[in-house]
Image 1 (cartoon, rainbow, N blue to C red):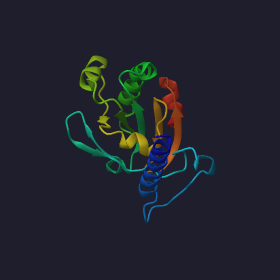
Image 2: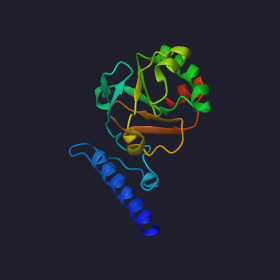
Image 3: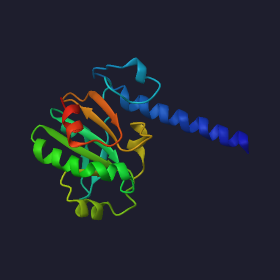
Length: 174
């Protein structure tokens, strides 16, 4: 029984590695790898892996649709206290900066009533639903909230783990 569990874990790890390799190493794209992140997941200097997720209206949204614009990619959940704490600041940041920066908030618990959460908190930035957890795995999200700042060419400039204030958001975008 233990051998089967170990084998299943190894197999799952190999599948995740293969998915990462598939989405990270795209032919024809410039690659910049930060050595310190090579074994710890996705981070600054790497090409942001593309994904396609549905928004709350059921429309498919792809990260590559935002090439040419800076993106704040935030992973969060409705049950997460630090995520709830940063939402008002994120909404204010979006209202003040939406002409220069797009916020894509990837929800990791779509089985909960995300629409109600969004309405109750007056959020206007795009909310995407990671129905099967694939985007969470591709981005190696272990703790939420986690936010990536992605430049106009699709390179990750910064990675922030934990909630942020409005001022921290402004500083991250510099």
